[in-house]
Length: 324
Image 1 (tube, rainbow, N blue to C red):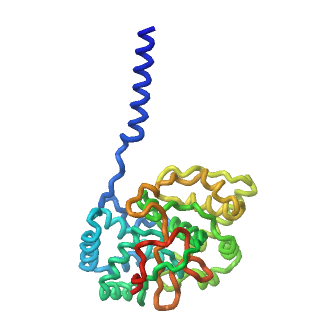
Image 2 (cartoon, rainbow, N blue to C red):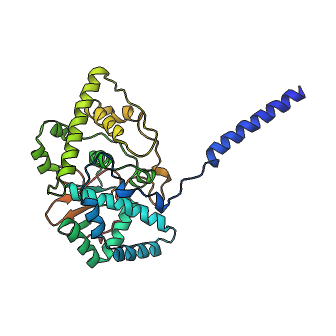
Image 3 (cartoon, helix red, strand yellow):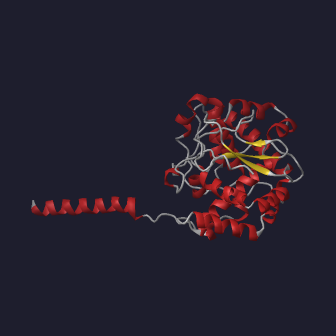
C-alpha cells in the first residue's frame, strides 16, 4: 500500500509539474525589430504598387528619429522595439487612409505614435502633402455610440491586404468579432465597380490596382459564401490556428454576416483565433481614438453613411488637441 501511495504521489507531482510548465513555462514572445515583416506585411496576392515606397520616402528618417526619441522619452517603459512595431501598424493605417474614404483609428497604442508625429507640425504637414497630396488631419472621437460594423469593415479590408501578426491582434484588439453591415454586403453584391469606388474608395492611378483587387475579393467571397450555404447551411470552415494570412477568416465573416447576422458571434467564434488583446501593453482592448480627415472633405472615420464613431470606448489619450 505504501509503495502504491508513493507511486500515486509521484504521478500526481509529475502531472502538476506538466500543468504548471504549460502555464508559466512558455516564453512570452518578445518584440524584436528584426521580426517586423517586410513591405508592411502585404499579402502575396495583393497587387504590388508604389504606395509602400511612396509612404516610406514621404517619412524622412530624421523626422522619424525625432518622433521616436520624443515618444521614448515620454514613455520610459517602452522599448525601441515597442515604438517600431507601433510605427509599423501606423504605416498600415496610413496606407488604408490613402485607399479608403473612411478609416477609424481603433488602437490607442498606434494612435499614440500618430500623436507624437503630429507634434512636429512642419514635418507632419510635409509628410501629409507628399503622401496624400493634402493635409491628413487627426480629429478626436466625440461620439460615445459604438458602430461595430465600422470595425467589421476595417477588419475585412485589413485582412485582405496585410498579414495579421500577434502584435496586430493585440494592438488593434480582436479581429472578426462583429458582423459586416448588411447594407455594405448588398452594395458590394449588386453595385458596379465604378459606383463602389465612388462610395468607398479614394481612386487615383496609385490606388486603382488595390481597389480593384478589394472589390473583386469581396464579390468573390460573397459568391463563395452563397455556394457554401447551398451545400451546408451551417457553414463548414477550418479553425484559424496561426497568425499571418487570415483571409480565410474574412470568408467566415462574410458567410455568417450574410446568413446569420443576428447570431453572428455565436457561429463565428468557433473558427476565429484565440482572444489575445487582454495581454497588450497600454490598451487592453480595441478603442476608438479618433479619425483622420484630409482636405478633400472625406473623413477617415467609421461607417459609410457619415459619422466617425466605431466599436470601443473613446480613447483617453485623445483630447481636444489631437487635430492638426
